[in-house]
Image (tube, rainbow, N blue to C red; front, side, top):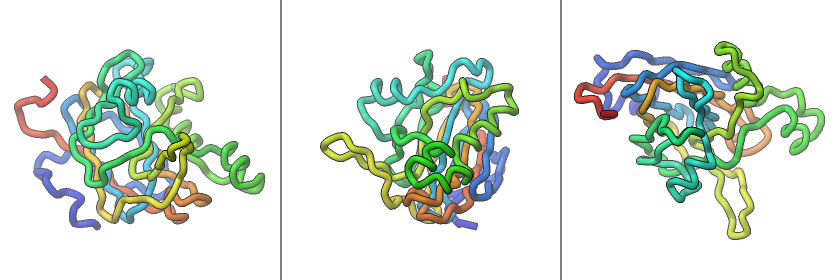
Length: 219
């Protein structure tokens, strides 16, 4: 296990700790004030991420508002994750990488077939992971929105072209997100094998949730 996984965390305040296997979906409610740490155990592993108001699923992450309100297409420490209602769902309070993508979208069976060939259509993809996780909460395709790709390297060229290139995260890289309201987090530990977002080799991640000591930082 990567030694930095619990660095800076009081282990007595950890309320959840799990290793998520490569290619798998995950969902969990992070209560207001709690912090979720995502650990890239092997390095260069994209983590596709959605977040909803856990008390009202109609309020959900908005990539356009998050980019527009902060004037930055990338996310890092201090970035707020805005909802379609203008609320703040979560704030990035720690980041050992420095830049995360919210423009590149999630892979799907359809995009796999278009980009990589019809024989790749039946490979597992993030959209299918999202749908499997969302079904537990009575949600489906209409509830999918633009996502965040933690640890995925998507530079933008001068002409506006997006690229997916080798990652910049190393084994043990972390990102910490504080819930500003009760937040339903949905993750696809990306199964993509056809582009460099996972180094062509999807690997496990670790998910740790802890409750910081009082005073409540959200007040």
